[in-house]
Amino acid sequence: MTTKAETKTPRETVTLIDNSNGRTLELPLLPGTVGPKVMDIRPLYNDLGIFTYDPGYTSTGSCKSAITYIDGDNGILLHRGYPIEELAEHSDFLEVAYLILKGELPTAVQKTKFVGDITRHSMLNEQINFFFRGFRRDAHPMAVMCGVVGAMAAFYHDSTNIHDPHQRMIAGYRLIAKMPTVVSWAYKYSLGQPFMYPRNALSYSENFLHLMFATPCEEYKVNPVLARAMDRILILHADHEQNASTSTVRLAGSSGANPFACISAGIASLWGPAHGGANEAVLQMLTEIGTKARIPEYIGRAKDKNDPFRLMGFGHRVYKHYDPRAKIMQRTCHEVLDELGMKDDPLLDLALELEHIALNDDYFIERKLFPNVDFYSGIIFQAMGIPTQMFTSLFALARTVGWIAQWHEMLTDPDQKIGRPRQLYVGEPMRHYVPLDRRG
Ligand code: CMC
Image 1 (cartoon, rainbow, N blue to C red):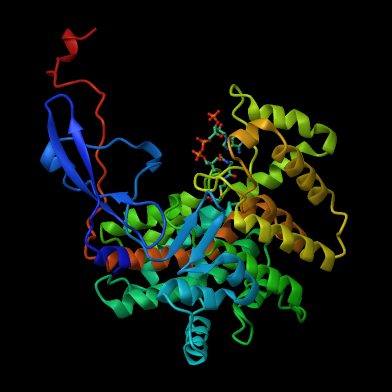
Image 2 (cartoon, rainbow, N blue to C red; image 1 turned 120 degrees about the horizontal axis):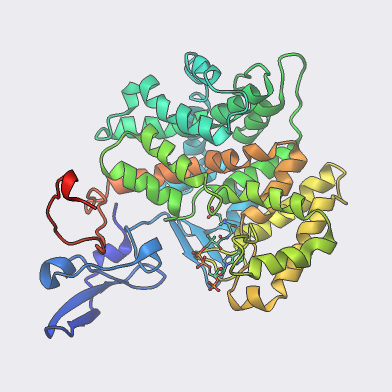
């Protein structure tokens, strides 16, 4: 991977002075194409014997990347330079997937080939069918996904050699193509319904709705408004630079682990309620709040430092402005509810009121807490008939393309090393073993 920043000679530097001994170190400032400069601290330990301390990586860049750019202060999200609003409006999920993976929008010929390649990888090895059956019917779909996706390494050996570019590509295509089948089978299994097989004549999003909602008993006609909404939701979740799950995929992959294991690790990380699990948590929160009259009580709880409750779907590590994805999601939510004749949906009404109250509350204003991508997605999913437990799996489905692109970028980066953070040790210094009869 090369970035424009990499080709420039850094002219600016930062000088660090260790006041305990007067030693200094001049560190280069690396300019990105846009965004803040990054101080290159690689010589720090060798030259000064010092590590940095940054829990949660609030000021640490963990890699170079040319995939996604976020300007959190201004609510800007770009994939390969293209604004998310333009992609959500004019593109489709597989075209965005191509862009994220390969760096450019495809030509018509490239797009046809890519769509064909993905479509022809959508079936799962039939043996995986039995793997699903080993789970309890009430298993959380994210638990099923962690297991099944990790186990895919056992079924697709011929795409686990990470040093072979062709195998890397095939593994990526397989994961993107098979994920709708995995997610829908987790759902079908929970219902006790037969697994449906992919339909190659359908688009990626249409096929996913077919896999989820069709049964072998009757013809299922995909609603084009819902298919378009699903496609847009997938675009909005496709990548988001170095978030927790993506960083997990990169870290797992940095040891040379196979792609199926790495994506399974990403799914595990995404599951948490502070990350992808928030869409499920938003719906649970709205259901618990129940009526507009109870909103002030929950706003009060969110502000109370002694109460662990947080307003789910609000706040973001990077966005200190309205999340641009949340705006598109809100619009999509209205479109879907209109189409389904649910204009007066009480949950949407409650969400809009909650958003309005929070956006006018000093606590949220001062901390720059705005709705994020998860605030409205749950309402759309619920209206489509997708159960709450499935929400985070849909996020995982969409994010698979971002994880694959970032994993691939990491492996082809000449600076790539195994990820190995250091620490500030605060435990006991060396002491000597005391035999049991002399302790106490
Ligand atoms: N409700 C109430 N207070 C909040 C919230 C919230 N949702 N989010 C942040 N705060 C407060 C927090 O208590 C802190 O206040 P103070 O400065 O007085 O201690 C301040 O805002 C800064 O919060 P932080 O925890 O230091 O910020 P962070 O960058 O570590 O956390 C976050 C970001 C997304 C984990 C957090 O905002 C949160 O827990 N939000 C709710 C969960 C959620 O919606 N997650 C989805 C994120 S977007 C999709 C994704 O990434 O997967």
